[in-house]
Length: 246
Length: 375
Image 1 (tube, chains in turn brown, cyan):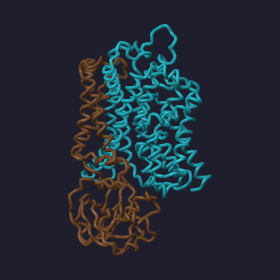
Image 2 (cartoon, rainbow over the protein chains, first blue to last red):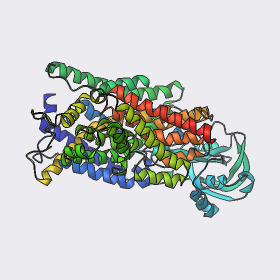
Image 3 (cartoon, rainbow over the protein chains, first blue to last red):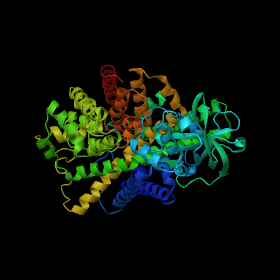
Image 4 (spheres, chains in turn brown, orange):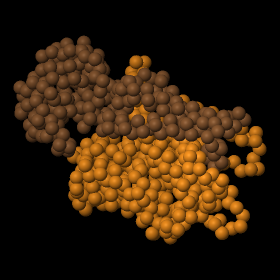
């Protein structure tokens, strides 16, 4: 412990901790897995964090300055472990986007409720052709209609998402889902479409699929809504950007 | 979770040991603290794992829940780190470059003007609820009057250009936009006025208080202040050395506060993994319950104030206007991670007041809004 409180040692530990944090953020940034955690629009902030952490780490180099005299400065072993915990957990669990396991305790969004959405997003969704629409675009489009089940019947659908077997669904149906993230995964909320597919049971939760089919009137949990009657369902690679941004 | 909260706050408000204490006693206390810290981390994980285990699901499901927990935890942490770093850098620069006599000269000392000025300081220092904490602590050590600091701490995460802009782009010009800025300002002022009735030594952690006291109240004494508060670096004139020192101090601040951020993010992620959101949201639509639900949600989600307006938009159609407003006003002031970070400035009792007073005031505001203006 005496070693741990020695000023030179403290300086070195602090520098290495900040360096470790910068490195951790940088590797996540470099391989794109950073966006499993936060919305793309925060990229600049993370870049800033990497630079700032490096600058501060460099300021601890030996001989650069006297060790700080103002002393809520000393880093204890416990404090150090807390700061290293995110890096430890991040290395222990390989980066993965939220999946079916997170759907269990979240409110599914698949009925066109009266929920208000950005009018601009709804307009943008309306301008896209049916084949270009994502799961989120479809929900935006539904929300603009008073009777989407009938109004959208017959329109072609081509969406990508991950599979979730909701216990409320009968056999031969599944949900195809994406998470929307406006800030970081703490505010992730799922958007889902009901898919009717004879071999639904062969697809495991969390497998990524491309669903092509046609919308038909149907229901989920007693509420009428458009259901995708699938023509074909193909397994695909998890997209580089697994979340959608509202 | 409640036990953990108490334990953690005991850990973090540890007093800087008085000189009479033996060194061996110090070492023992430090070992105890490390032990408790590890135990706490284990308990946090165990709580999550047990909850899943109890639901009778298999090992794979358990692993997936743990994965979800880690992803959410890292999400909150990674999103908050840049803001905490920025706040720490500002704090370091203030420590080295701001002469404390400037604070004496330009800022009001009495309670009401102080609170009003404090609540508008965010316009000059655009910070969110993570970045504001190191800045306020540093300013207190420079002798900032208490009421200014409290008002700044509570109001700055909303009353600043970035957040005002993001609220405007989410909700447009209207009652929610005006209400958010106005009520954040008012609640911060009221809480600051209440806090100004207390003595500084009741409200600040001993280590912060000593520096605060030296800076503000020893100005005319003959004994030299212990922290050399007048000129932070008497011998050091070179800009480069001053910058290095301010970066050093920024790093110290960051590493100390990151601990609170980590614990707060862990708690928030655990709550999100364990507590079903749908249960919370289906609880109530009434004018009173809906406000409480949205406040609880704001506290648990711990989303940064710069973006929570977009999140609140999702609830605007289904929840009462008063409750959405309470989410937007209360959330930036107090949430799991920021209230843990408050512990680096204030003792536990003061932090409890800092949580409860805004909670009550925002609740009153939300209910009043619902009853008078309809929903």
